[in-house]
Image 1 (cartoon, rainbow, N blue to C red):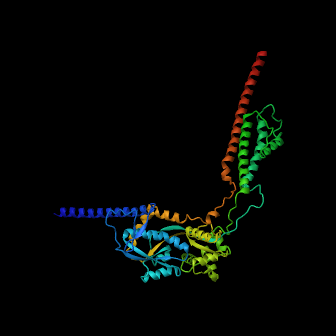
Image 2 (cartoon, helix red, strand yellow):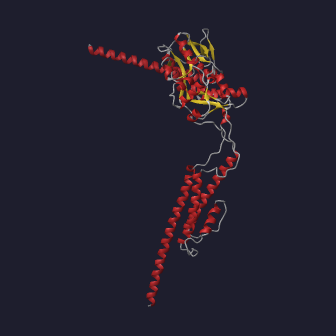
Image 3 (spheres, rainbow, N blue to C red):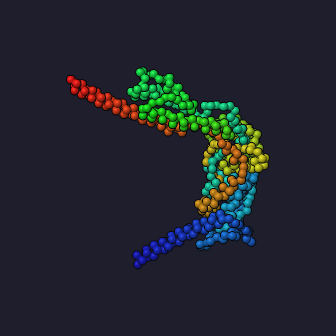
Length: 480
């Protein structure tokens, strides 16, 4: 009887576990259907009589009874300090629309600008806001509200006034190669100048010089003449000498082609942007001050940094300049355009959208992102601790991430033509030594092969000498 009871309990537990597993699989499949449907062309939404958005062209294919929020209306806060925030919030609106269509809830947008995260905390605690989106994640903030998993991830970047471009004003014939490369080219030329008469002397040919240094001047004229793409009269019938000259000519042809091509590129292509600083340390010591909006993440980033760090030094600049504190992002952009201020933005997409917006408004490239990344950052939505909808919303975001639709929305947001495209100018690069390493290795191999050929020739000549000497002795013996 006891055994039968144990078997029944085990069977019930197994059935319950299988039911939970199937339910989880069905939930994932349903949310995947949401993402796939939204990615299809022609996807539309309409509102029902209760105001909830549902899919019109691609109805959700439910595999079981969906988790139901019972038509609750969530009050969602959105940062609305500029049109850039509006473009970013469109991604979050898409997410809420998709999840609301499945979980059976609606949302009402509550735009705000002043107050930053402190205002969000106050509104959530007072019950006037259920959640807020487009919030940058920070450890101190996580102590007050609970973050969903990251939705947009990037790095903090610095936005500055568009700098001037460097222009090539004079011809510099040495610019294509580095100093070390030039030194090695000259050293190789001197070595080949010495090796040519040495090989000719050791080859024991009929035209071999009586002294090893005879013909050194002729070799120097020949070697340095090849560097100007000129011919010469250095002729030898020995394999060792020909091998060395073949390696040298191959080296010279490639070097000359690389040099002339690089020199032309320096004289013909556009020059790169001359950024005032290219590292956070340089920014901390450069005469430029960060501008901040109270309550925004850049304030928490700078204020919470150690005083002696680069970020801490930039916070000291903020404290010393009353004009560095502004009330909106648009006002901060106006400060940046003076050239005296910089703006920390939590994500390269923010920097891109700010530059695009200003470009469309002014028709000029007035903003630029410095090519440095400070710290990783993420934005998402926040809820109060203990919120009953947290787990379901987090599951939905996971599926939308895995489906790739969040990445598609982000890419579509950044496809608008803007000024940052013009910052990517083609520029000529100095040919570094590692790029020519194989060429120098080839010349060295040519010298080694030439030396081996010389040794073989000398060995053959020595064997012939012994054979001739032996025959001479034999002939002398016969005469005797």
